[in-house]
Every structure is written in C-alpha cells, then in structure tokens.
Length: 246
Length: 251
Image (tube, rainbow over all chains, first blue to last red; front, side, top):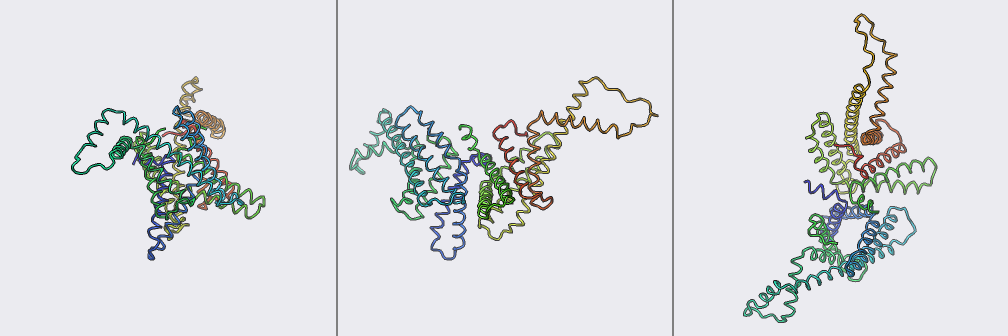
C-alpha cells in the first residue's frame, strides 16, 4: 500500500496509469466494436478514453519546461553521440508539448481561430522525431554493449561453446549471423534497461506512424502498442534499476 | 526552473495549481458577470472551470487510500485530543474522496445512474466535517501554545500584586477586569500566531476553505465571488506550504 501511495504521489506515475487506462480503453473499444449487445459499454469506454485524454492534456501543461531543463542537462554529457541524440529528443519533446498545450487551449475554447488538424499533425511529427532520436540512442547503446562484450574473454569462451554445441542436431546455416544474434541477445539480456527502453520506443513509434499516415494500422494494434509501452513505463518508474540513465 | 521541475513532479502540487486556477475562474466569472461581459466569454470561463473541476476529480482518484494511510499513522500520536481530531479528520477526508470518485464516475458517464446532486451534497458534508475537525485541532494547538506562553511570561515577570487575603472583601466586579484581560489574551494570541507561522497558515487556510462547503450546502450562502476568492487564497497558501515544507503544520 505504501509503495502504491508513493508511486501515485509522483505526477509521472499517475500520468502513466492514466495513459495505460486510455490505451486499454482504445483496445477494448476495437475488440468490442462488432459486438452488438455491448454497445453501451463501448460508448462508456469511448467516453472514459476521451476524458482521460482531455485530463492528461491539462496535466501536461507544465511539461515544456521539464523538457527544456532535461535538454539543458543532456547538452553537458561527455559522450558526443549520446548528448546529441538525447538533446534532440528532449528538444523535439518540448516542441511536442508546446503543440499539445495549444491544442488544449483550442479544446477548452480559450483560442478559437487555429487549425486544429494542422497543429495535431505538427504535434505528431515532433513526437515522431523525438522517438526516432531516442531509438537512435538505444541502437548506439546496444552497439557499445555488443563491442564491449565481444572484447570480454569470458564471453568469447561462452560464444565458442554455443557455436560448437551439438553440430549433429542442426548445423548453423550462416554461422556469422548466429554469432551476431547470440551476441545481441546476450547483450540485451545482461542490460534489461536498454531492452525495455528499446521495446517501449518501438511500441510508441507505431502511434505517430499511424497518425501521420506513414504506416496505417488498425485502431486495435495502436491501442495494444500504447498499452504495452505504458505498462513498460510504469514498470521502469516503479523499479528504478530498470530505468535507462541518463 | 529547477525548483519548478521538482515542484511539478509532485502530483499534489499539480492538483493545487489546478485548484487555484479553478477558483480564479470562479472569481473571474463573477467579476465579469458584475461588469456585464459578453455571454460567450462567460460561457468559456464557466466551461474552463468545469473542465478543471472534472480533471481534478480524475487526478484525485487514488486519494482515499492516501487519506486512510494518514489516518492509520495518526492513531499512533501521543496527544489524545490531537489523535482523536486528526484520525477522524483523515477518515472524513477518505469518505469525501470516495464520494468524489463516485461523482467523477457519474459525470463522465461511466455510471449514469448516479444522483449527482445527492452525492455532491454528501461529499460537501464530509468536507465540512473535515474542516471543522481541522479547525478544532488548530484552536487546541493555539490554546496549548497560549497557555505555555502565559506561564512563561508569568514565570519571567516579578509576581504581580497578590489578591487581598481578606475573605470578607467583595469579589472585584467583572467589568473593569474584563478589558485588560481581553487585551492581554489578544496580545498573547498575536504573539503566539506571529511566532508560529505554520499554525497561522493552517488556521487561515482552514477558515478560507470552510466558506466553500458552507455556501454549497446552503448553510451560509455567500455568493460565487466570495467563494472564488476564498478558494483561491487557500490554494495559494497550500502551494506555499508545498514550496516551503517547514511551513506545513505537523503532525
């Protein structure tokens, strides 16, 4: 109970729970769309989803400053590639929040004469760019991990064992590919934070891809990807060891 | 900027800011109405206020658990009066949040059969009980501190003129005695409050807050302008206690 209270006292924790609920509703609406007996349940779920989305837009009003502060911090990192990727990701996220705030103002009626569709597309573009730069950072981290592991003598012995085990059962068709995949999987397994972050970014990526029309998916897949990335977000917040730093 | 990031990361702080904005909208709506503003501007302001109120209800969805945890902690206090006041206050707050959650479910259409008026009245009643208990606790703390201050002053100053030991003397008439006693008490009160900013802040906050349920339950209607001003003041005071944790009254 104490852990739950502490988790929800962080505003990021609550936001992730709301996001998970929002995408769970979207997924459920898609799964129940053809069920004629559950029409009122579907209507309720849609209303819940809209309410969560509207509430989250209000709660995100201050996040531009958070992203700018994060971008200022990541500019000072020693590793150049990491600094570039993270600063670009944070800057794009700040732009996304600005677009999101404008959309909120439009939705509540504070600003009337703006093109909602154009601003929504801009928001999706900024979000897409921030996810692409985050994924670049993930790939860079994985490459570094793999290089580090390949140099490790203990690991090389393990690799030899794996490549030579039971050749009578199945021969590796492309031994180099087998070695590469083994190296990749071992690196990811020893650093779950990188694996989780990569999976989260890949899941998140489908949402703007669908919204921008680059790769159209049905609403169910989008809902599922959103739900999975929210759950991973909740897990990384609850377990700080699984969080990728910086 | 760093302090904003840290402040914003607490979900209670965010809720307080939205509360301040909500009551500012109430006050703004009242002023605009008095000033004769356009109908659609009034409509925008009232719509914004409703949106913030509903979003705050969403943000408060888990607070019953927090209030129950606070009640569990308050049971272990040493002082009997404080223990009673705080435990019952937290329990009432938990009930208020439970009613608030039901209101949220009703307003968003999840449970359409909810009688919004009935549950709204209920939630304001629990809120009023909470505030009355908080006020009782503040007055009790004030009384203790004033007692302590009076004894400290009595021990420091030379013993004043002793009352006449003669039993046949008439008891002094109360009227001439009352005024210096009253002014002494007032002076004590001001000194104690001045040297205890957390108590002063909590007292002011509770007093401002209490007008809101009194107005909404119809016990003492004061109009939306006054309610907006009280709500805004208490939200700002609450934000001050979050920014400077030493200003928060403990326990």
